[in-house]
Image 1 (spheres, helix red, strand yellow):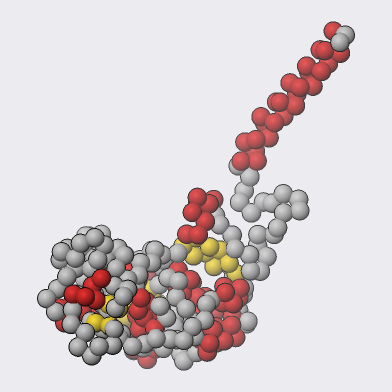
Image 2 (image 1 turned 90 degrees about the vertical axis):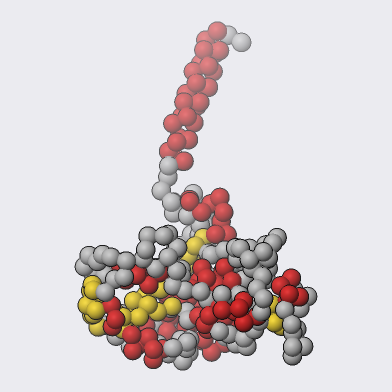
Length: 303
């Protein structure tokens, strides 16, 4: 090869390498949502998108448009047998700062600064009825998806720790909301097929759907139909949901009590176990079943 040709080839190789080195960090820092020509549109209706933070565990976080999210909700008949409010332990002081979950929500949603362990005054706007309150006694903290609704939709199979985390969920601000007390009482444990707030129905349906996705809960047919009907008249917003860890049966049971090996604590009677938020236990599925007397021989104890 002639020396002149060798020099020309060397210059071209150096130039190409330099271009690659410059382009690499630019590609790595490209804004999320930018796609290469011909790539799928990540914001099209129904697309599931993971953020850069969630890439390492893509199943932990989803982004999906509201109407597609509702279509994707799994349908199943509700199973209400065995529900007791005591099976969802709340309110707790998870971080040990003297404020329990109720007070944490009051603090987060107050439109004026509040202080103290037991919050009594502030300023809260209830979007269900567009009323504003300054006394905490006028405000309830609503489980957007009520405890019984959760039980009927899948929480019946959860262990006590998962039910406790659901009942005190501060990890997603859509799970718990401060609202007018008597409006919350009128809602009770009804789903959107049976009850909707007077105002902000689109917000409510979006929050309901997000909570169902977060906690891997099912919907019944009437509930899904109502969600879809309301959502058809709403902006098709993108829901970003980080899914909660769900433990069923005996896995990841509570602490203490000598249950051992991932089981719930062991108590002298079902009454005592239930008073601490544990049970029910199923024959052939839960080790704890064999600790207690199945008096009616239905294959379930502590229900």
